[in-house]
Length: 329
Ligand code: UDP
Image 1: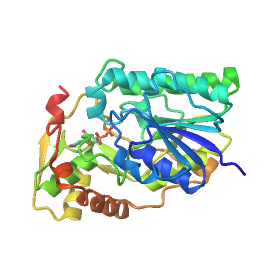
Image 2: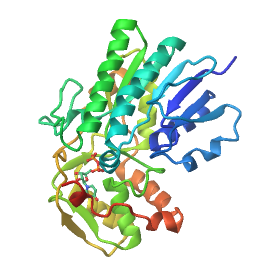
Image 3: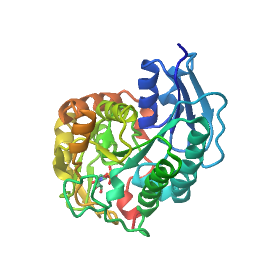
Image 4: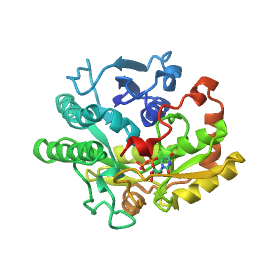
């Protein structure tokens, strides 16, 4: 039987590259697309030799053309760390809005099912904890995170409109903080920031007093949840994340213990609109997808630390933004 063909945008990124691996392993024909602004071809170079893998260097904010049949589209192209969307705000807005529109048009033309990567950021700085899918969010449209949050909110709306108006098969995953190998060491996110600092023998930079919380999901768990959602028949948003919540200060202590660094935590200004709490309510994922995370933070962090340690020295030493807090004021 001919292989099913799937387009994965943002394929050279952290999540996109893991999705490529998963769909290759499931014997799909994978069409990978990335404009390489934040992605890195090293994440997928091991796939180039395969006959069921092809790569297009393309920006999905521009018209997207794919020859031949297409059965599925996964839209994972977008800057996804606060540092990135502060640096490239317009591209962030465009890929979530124009890019999504182009891909929905392609999905319609090809009669493909489309899954979009939404995010816990659509909940903004949430006033309820944990966040269920029914919570509408608390977002500052004109703050520094607004470009990402609003692009993702628009993305959900237009995807739902194509579903209701055109009858397109669509899926929406709301992704909470995820980590694992192939995260960029210098993307400014807390986990690579802390581990990178520990490896380089620097102090760990905690923003604010460290009492804000996050809930970290290991990448393999997330990919499994997305895989199940794609093949479910549920068109409304589903949270995928790990409900194990921790303060950033406690998280820093875990990293210090894991890495054995003799450095300490130092406190910096809290970035503007930094959410005070974040934890997914995964009741829907449990009930609809029979999914829940399996990898504990202790296991996942160990694997991720080994990955970061194995990177070339120049990658480990290269830090673009040491002081995110002051950058964000
Ligand atoms: N953070 C920190 N030190 C860092 C980077 C981030 O204390 O070097 C904090 C940040 O202020 C936020 C949390 O860690 O409260 C998670 O930040 P991240 O950028 O990883 O993702 P977010 O969940 O905010 O999108």
